[in-house]
Image 1 (spheres, rainbow over the protein chains, first blue to last red):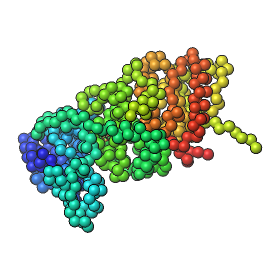
Image 2: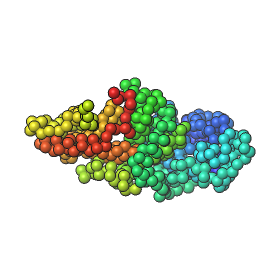
Image 3: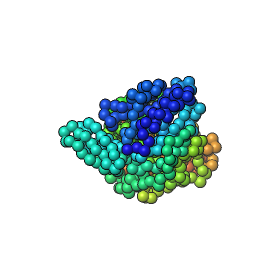
Image 4: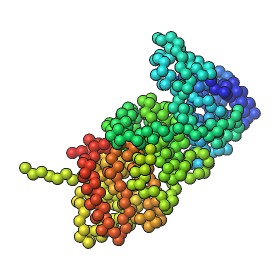
Length: 331
Length: 144
Ligand code: SF4
Ligand code: SF4
């Protein structure tokens, strides 16, 4: 259950539509099941009344949608942002990707979103419906009857390791603001650093070889906003195709993560959308962890206008050979 | 039967202003460095995109070394400072993926350091030779 309810969001959105502040609302529409809600754009109150939903599966980060929606509006777009989304929002503003004047942002508190893949693994396949109530999640399944899962076990990875319940950008806040959390999000990265090179290689071969190059991780990422992407370049040899061998897998993943290094806010969208459940956050967090250790702590999106570590330097920076040693042994 | 000694293939990206001139000086001074080092001249070490490094490995390199002007001496003032951060992160990531860290290197070589150029190349070539062929970041389609 989320502290903010659907009705709170709908009534606030309707009021803003009615008084002419906004003419478009970014929200969620029901899918076939409770867990496959899809992002949608609403322009009138009736449609919202009929189709708007909100709940534990509304994890999509809407900040990237502002790139296109802010161009379409005559007034403003209304967007609901969870705390983690506000970091992406700021990062996009830092990179001048949309017009702040065209957006009305409402910050909403978040109690953690659920991961249908985890729920399926813990209960059964053939999930037809899900009811959440307090600390437990009731899963209705087609073949195995009803099952109960603890909410804590069903939380999305990024929510287990939530880095902040505090909004860093909004025009208006619904409910209470939270605090920045001292999360354990780098623990898994440190565990991989501790492995031997052979183990690390095997771990990543196993993970990356599952990639089908659907490009979902790139498309959803609010830091990946180039209109022309290297991976769409017909001369690259890897344009919109599934990886032919392990080299292509490695190349796609290294370059994807590198292109957002220093700008990735660790919003977790890439890992959420990956149909192959590849732990992409472990690549992004390696860069974040290294940046923090080599160049001082830096959280992308915390402040609008901050300078990303890769477009900055200090004359006394670490030498690459030193960096590699540290990146391996500091675990 | 003749047993041929294994020679690693090495790509050396050298910046036009310092390291490439350093290589030239090594030649002028008749200093030896291995012939398996293939130099690619770039306008600045900062020109080297992470993709170049991966491409070199894809096309069969066993080791990749990037040489530029010493920090503070960049012809374009600050290019090599960006290179330093980029390569620190990229190489750390490669090692995180289990690719041998001895296959990559950044070295600052000035136009006056012909001797350093030759010594670095000899040393790096030996280091890569000890590892053997690059198997972890290779593309079989690009191999003979
Ligand atoms: S979302 Fe997953 S499967 Fe699709 S390209 Fe990204 S890593 Fe590969
Ligand atoms: S790389 Fe992943 S975690 Fe980072 S900003 Fe993009 S979608 Fe979010």
